[in-house]
Image (cartoon, rainbow, N blue to C red; front, side, top):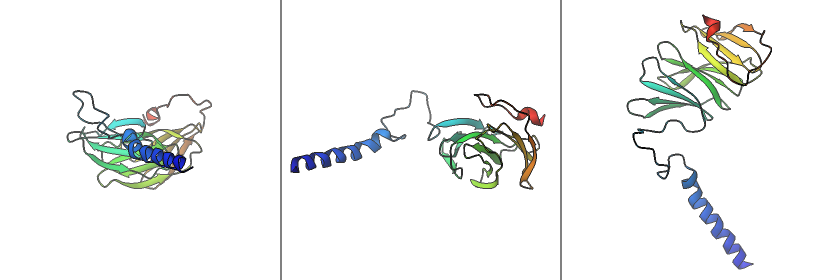
Amino acid sequence: MKNMLNSVLITFLVIFTFTPTILAQDSPQWHLPDRVKARYGKGNVREIKYSPDGTKIAVASAIGIWIYDVQTTEALHLLSGHTRAVRSIDFNADGTQIVSGSVDKTVRVWDVAMGIERVMFTGHTGTVSSVAFSPDGNTIASGSNDKTVRLWDISMGYELHSFTQHTRVSPQSYSTTTVLS
């Protein structure tokens, strides 16, 4: 019995000593290929967008939205607030805000420089799979597998309109940018 207990303790010690290193995303054992400067994102990557000026990238992931400086490869912010995976992101025209849509059925607007949430919209009853800023940055369009496209007023914080004529959800995300044209 004592030998069995010692074996179990040694097994747990080995597992807890080596498993975090083996599974760690930033572990040195996961070598980057030649010519690769950095590895972006932590968690499953859902979507990547460049800022309009090309100095930053936003990475939508299972744990939030990572903002990186393209030149230095430094992680500037992790925008967290969604309770489930982020599916879609978009920068506004001047790159000061990001909109995100999530499996948690919410649409959120973030301040890029400060790394904080500014507005949250609720109303979708399914995963928000697509988001887009209007060209003037005052309105957001969001598409969901609840078969609706919704327009949101950022400054007032409410829904402007809901398009409910969609009768079939495509297995792929659909774009809402044509709504704003």
